[in-house]
Length: 451
Ligand code: GUN
Ligand code: FE
Image (cartoon, rainbow, N blue to C red; front, side, top):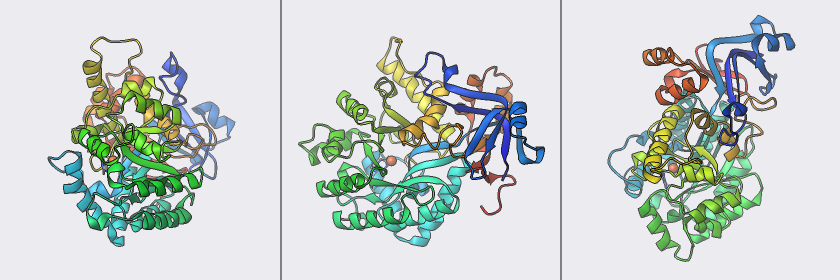
């Protein structure tokens, strides 16, 4: 384990939308050193010569990545691990896509050894893409999450996940009941929550597949302690919204279905939120609940354009999610790429006249939403998202010249902001040269053999 890492070091320190000058929201050391404690937390960060002298670092204690960019690991705020095998499944929109592809895939996770093999593949795919933390859906099977957490524990990853709860409107073999889900969730929480770096999320799939009795169980579990997450979907697709209204006719809105059961609060995260009303945005803001913007999935399923502008104006806690398997890439670079294009489309359709407070997805904002902003949305910003001393040492090493096109394009960039933007448009897993988890080199050339 190196005591320090040398390279070009970049991280956000605040929301770039919150200050008039984005320079006040990040730190960048062209030639910097990141110093780690023995236990893998961040000790210090600063310019190379000064920091080396300050900590009396010897050359052989420093992993030298000069010329590479060192940033905090990406955080994916919404992803389904049992859906890795159905990425790029042709032709359907949400409800039919679930029936034709997602449910059959998820039914295979009744088999522990299958779940274990996919967990291994899935977590390594996250790492290869520079994603070091994710909020993850399992399948309905308790063992799907047991398998995922067992593998995540071996890698010492900070992973948040939960078994899906669903007790109606899905194939018989994928249904639990309010009673079995209660017992399974309690057992999973007792075994896994806060074990090492693992955390548990109560995960009702969405209102359509949960009876009122089951949402009551979800609420009781979520409120039984103050450090559990609540993870679900909301307002993704117009057909889904209409069905939800039929099933919960007395609710004021889709989000109010959840709120009526007490499921909207801190550490609750709602994926998509494409068709939320003003009222629902206000409710999220008031309850300090978070949204996950999933651009590749929203485009792939034809669900709609997330109202990024509104989320920013309302100051909603926000992260970006791949939503694999409806999403089409594990790469947060490719996800930022499509997020940028969605915001571009929103500008032309919703706001023909450019306005002062229009939100742009600047490169600084995009990298904020995939690191520190996501950590805030997950109430983990005391642990993740930047290189502030005391935080956990999860970081990635990027080669900005990993492909001929990147190499050529980077020659024609002048500023950090331009380089970040080119990365978010053109980069993918090929630029991720190494990944460190709690200061340990766990992916890339020369990685710790125990991984
Ligand atoms: N809504 C309910 N379940 C799902 C799912 O698996 N994927 C997506 N994209 N939306 C959902
Ligand atoms: Fe999803």
